[in-house]
Image (cartoon, rainbow, N blue to C red; front, side, top):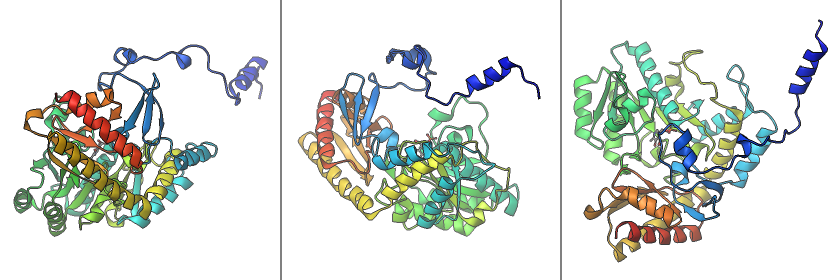
Length: 431
Ligand SMILES: Cc1ncc(COP(=O)(O)O)c(C=O)c1O
């Protein structure tokens, strides 16, 4: 083979493996919040400050100001920021293998799948990258399973009003909030929305259409929809009706899993077992990964090539998630979540006793909803903003509910400091 000297030199030059110093320019550009409005598609309205560093449940912004983190992203950073076990797993994997595609499998993915199946009802795992993608896989699997076993008429999906299942066209339609789904053209058909926690509505739907329903999809507690817990009667009725009519029960545990409620997954506390469970957010503790867990029977409806995703089971993501799993799935951490719940509730009740702004305080584990009382309804975003100004990161769940979802291992001091800052923020925003 003849190759010119110039071609050989070009190939050699582009093969440099030594670390290349960043050229002056984009890589070292000073960054301001104004750049967001200038450069980004306007899907978000981030806070005025830019976080640059995190450690445990503390975050620092560009000005060096410290914030207590009661948000964990949105219930994502379950071990806080820069947990040593995650750093170790990521660094080790970063030196070993980054990506091979699903034409090959890889060790971290299989190790994580083994951990998840050993610890849950599931016998099969499908890895992907986001919650929406896990729910998309779950709904496609449920449709395919019903199609192959009962025929094309069994395609109806039952969901709940106010549900949130992600932003793909299918999952946003399965979700029960028109504000997220309207304006995107013809939605996927065959999805019914019933009132959450309404057992009679569920029974009536199955009585009318039992042989057309392929799946019921539910969150054990509606997170985005206002931190509304599913009643045991409702969740158990969904299980019973699905079993009786040959439909699959899909539990969306993207926000409630892994460990957030004080169990590895919330279904373990509810007396039900799903056919499909979706997990994301806390699964990777801040590294993007999601999973659909299911039975061998349901999984058999998928075969090679019918579904997939480029990054599903990526070694870096699975190595990190494996490290998160090993820390979270311990009695120490899960007991600690329940102990923190008691502390949070006590602190929030004390704040409310001094200044009654909450109509209801609810939630499980370190996943809490604080519903504002009548005079303050609609003011949750204002409290969130005031919290930022008081050095605290919190979330909202709709206009009336503040949502607290810290790291599962947040320290006692950080909880107390965060609650003090929350009290300041409430005074500022609800003056
Ligand atoms: C219950 C639930 N399902 C699905 C999703 C979508 O997850 P993602 O944003 O990773 O697609 C979310 C995100 O908030 C969620 O809370």
